[in-house]
Image 1 (cartoon, one colour):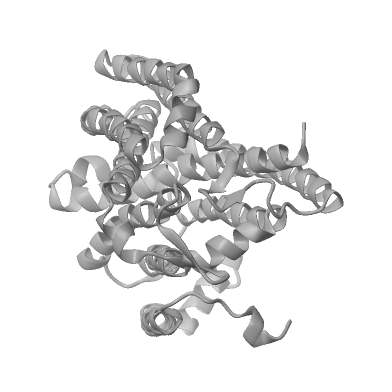
Image 2 (tube, rainbow over the protein chains, first blue to last red; image 1 turned 30 degrees about the vertical axis):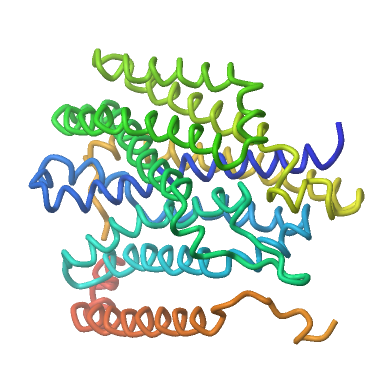
Length: 341
Length: 58
């Protein structure tokens, strides 16, 4: 197997890790803010506050790894995307900073500011929306070469239906992933009132998730025929993803196996995400850039792959450890242990 | 490669600069306010006293 494929697969794996963990975090933040308005704070506050914690800033490590890997493996991708993504990614970074500052200010700050909680919740939804623009741009048609330099066509991007379907999918799936996780989490914590509400959220967002995913495939047919044809070649991957979606919904519907429902959701998103990635091959940016254009030299690629797999081997167990130590620790979840400060 | 040759050709670099300047102003003032409040609520003297009690010196 050639190094370019291994490289891009490793990066894709990191991105998938980020998407799942960050989605849970973003969505939990939104539900926490929403419960302030919807008067469900007394039910949901406890379980979400147990989950939300500055510790989850570790999720950004996945994102940093992804960017570093991108520059390392595909220097020319850094050139194209670095130029084109200045504005969208700057917006994401500002939002991430606002969101991160909430943790610090809220933990050590003087009073509960409702405005800040809302800002925090909304930022959690805007971050995935702004990051998802990258996927839209990669489909081609939004970048024009002026001389030697790529230029982003803001107007086309803003008025494209594809952009908005991907934005909708990103927001909706954040809510769906997060609600399903929190349902399972509330079940472990034996907080049945919260579980019922979260289960409702989860079921409510399941339909929009699958609809918007379908909408994107339909839009791609008009926007990028080659990609659409590639998707159709491996249609069974997406069909299988649909089966796991049905399993999750069925479990939630019948109020059974909440944890399994969440694992099934991960498989659903994993299949769709990797199916999407495989069908995108070999392009990084239609039609200018494939993974073979300007791939780094072999020695660098090998070193990077080893470093990344080692990084992954360190990062995943540490997250699992974090989860076991305090997230799924029964006394912690139920809030029996007192806070020291 | 000189610095001007390596600089991005992307548009709106200046706008983004102002955006980040704004962000740092907001975060900077926020941190100052939070720190001042923290120390007003829990002065160093009280903190030291609490620790002394914890260690069993009093």
